Image 1 (cartoon, protein in one colour):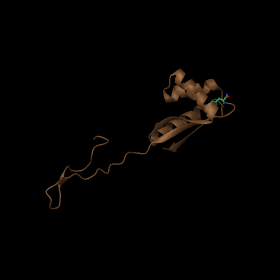
Image 2: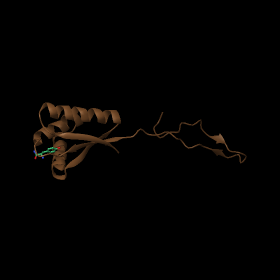
Image 3: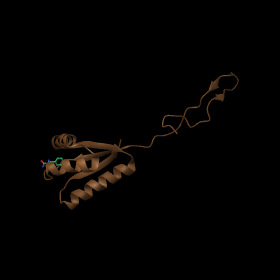
Image 4: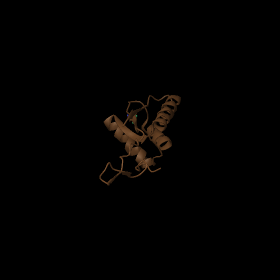
Length: 111
Ligand code: TYC
């Protein structure tokens, strides 16, 4: 099934005009969630770069640029995912940071 296609049974005959009308599709797209990384004063820059490479599939250059954005602005969106994937990414980052005793914070919010 296409994500933009209709779920109906195709054209229907109108009341008495002979015009075929196509009912609007009511298919809902699942909600998406932004994963946010927060700045802090203690987590080493290289650790954040490694997190972005490891859990968000970024190149070193992409990860470095985004780390600097978080460092300067305080927060940035690092990806947009389904609820389940976003929840997993947040848990992976929080667990990895905790295991390395860094206070790095990662959260999610509905788009
Ligand atoms: N501000 C940190 C430092 O100066 C680096 C940092 C960047 C920490 C991004 C967290 O999400 C973060 N060492």
